[in-house]
Amino acid sequence: MKKKLERNVPKAAEPSAVLAKGISLQLESLTRIHDGILQTIAAAAMAGQAIKQIGEAVVPPSLKAAEWLQSLKSERRRIATRIADFHDDVLKHLTPNMELITEALHDLPRQTKEALIILGEHGWFIDMQMTPAGTWYMRDALLSGKIDEAENLFIKYLEGRLPDIEKSILTRYPHRSRILQAAFDAHRRQQFALSIPVFLAQTDGISHELFNQHLFLSNRGKPRTAIYVESLTDQYLAAMLSPLAKRLPINASKRRNRKKKSAELNRHAVLHGESWDYDSRANGFKAISLINYVAHVVDKPIERPRVQCDA
Image (cartoon, rainbow, N blue to C red; front, side, top):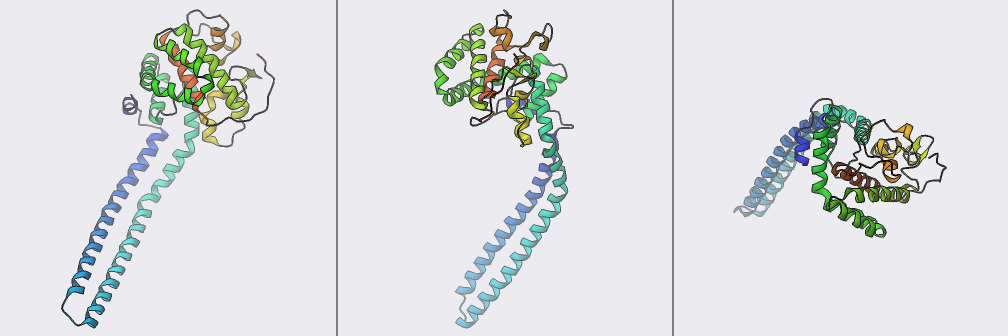
């Protein structure tokens, strides 16, 4: 699945593509440097053999020592010169690419946030094991209207990862394992009407454990988890957590905040009995993608102040 996603990643105007180009140029330089190092090692080995032969020569001891020292000094100078040349070669080939790489890394948080929000608007949330290439491809497929293709790819990816996802979540939250195990079992039996509400409810509980905020409750029109995300100074971490700071179809709690005739999975509609057709296979995997994302996006609970909610 990952290989298929990576094969189809567009090559233009992507930070991953720009970064790959810079790294490729560097690798070509490093390959040449590597070959030079191998030549130096070979030369050093030959020098060692020569030194051995000098030591075994049938000449007066004083001459033997003099030749040995001269050979050693000569080889030392030669190796020092080659190392200096390698250093210059490294700088020559790497320096022009550093600006390219720096620009790509600087733009990565923005691109990441954009991609994760677009996925979230369609009800999908990334797995922490997904490659950036896979994420960019999913974003572009959704933006270009290839909804079914993107969803089928995501479902196939999650199907392959499901045993590991289940094991990881149950291990991280053993006190929730009985309930979550029942939800995963129901999902495998394609009883999505049973599995989806449980996944959504447990996601909110895990969110409260990690951030001391409920994902599905709002504060001034934003998810309460936005309080934590907006306090971050680490731009990349903030980008990775950006879906927790934005009102998305899954966490829109009021009718006026939900798009009319939206087919996207919505927690409020499911748990409050407003939806009676949510139990699709795609929604089952969307619910798993959400709980998997929330359960793994940070490593440990964060203490945050409690706030009042509006809905």
